[in-house]
Length: 482
Image (cartoon, rainbow, N blue to C red; front, side, top):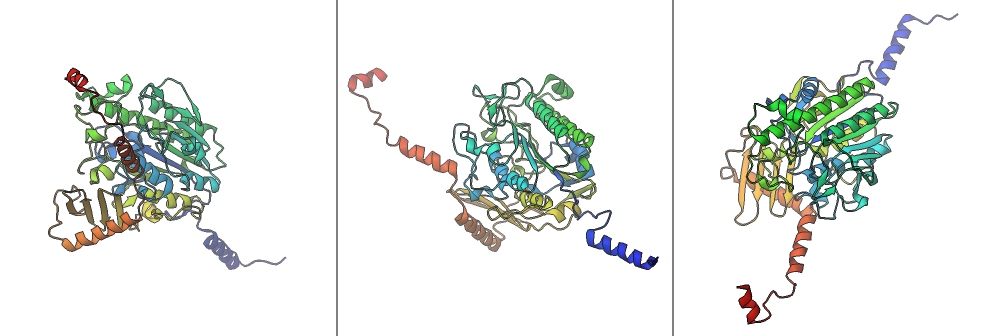
């Protein structure tokens, strides 16, 4: 029998390992098995309103994920709900398809353009089961815009932006669906979403990768929570802050249950988890929602050191609480001060899933896996906060332009590294930087679609201008009105 030399065996092993990868992969490497993907989105959560940013609000589940993974300190979203959700689904800034201005109002019929190739579609092509449990807000009046028609195998939760947490209604109509059917059921929405996510995981075949988009309506107005959660915050006197804090903790508990279900199913070690808010916490009643008049309420969200909040282009409206976790693949116990935008999740996750980007339109998102996993410098050198006909904000490097173009216009320039709170406008001292960033904003504006909401509302105004004259029929009717 021929003997194989020991050195030859050793060389063969080394060659095998080198070719197929090490048995204990470094953090930059991905799993040979397609990872499960869990994207969790909170609604209107203040940057500081999580324990891992020093809040008194109890969020132990999120804190544990941040400790085991990486807290993303320069993670950006759009300034409002619909635009951020569209950015996640498309990997493209919402100015590309007319969703850059405000949210889709409950009485409007438009939605996210159906020629956009969405994240669940790309992942479904890569062999994933896909599910959305929670808020959609990318089109509700026509079923062609609904999640089941946009790549999700399963959908559960509200289609519009704001609901009562207990009745699941908005202006008397139920906005609570399972797949394409209205569901009339009792329960606190946050708990129901957690229940459904746990059930989905328990019933999932782990041989097939899962993409779960878990989108809570917490902590959006109206500020509501079950009594047992309110009782946890007896020390908070303000009722809005108390209910807001209770709502955040209730959400965190459900996130904990979902994590436990993944662990019980032996799926957690092969699941990448991304958590983010859809925008900063609300600081202006104008952006607080439609169900309740919030103009006389002290708004409870805390965006920490960052200026203003939801609806604005300042850091408080766009820099959001976020984290990433994947045991053994994302180096844990870190905070990351590198810019990442919601649009970056699309190419990053699709590539991790072994999918293709061929069907998507040109992406604004960049693959940031090396930044997430190892803390490498972000490939993102520009952040487009938003481009609208009346305002724009663009950051290149550390320099951020906030340009309000309506007359009288204002131009603001901030060095975000030196002044993250945006307290010192240095536009006057840096005219060349202002000119360059204004040119970039104009360049982007030339590429943008007109905001759908503004087009509709301008058309409505013009139609009202052609109504019959509102004049008295005769002097008697005029005098009667007086």
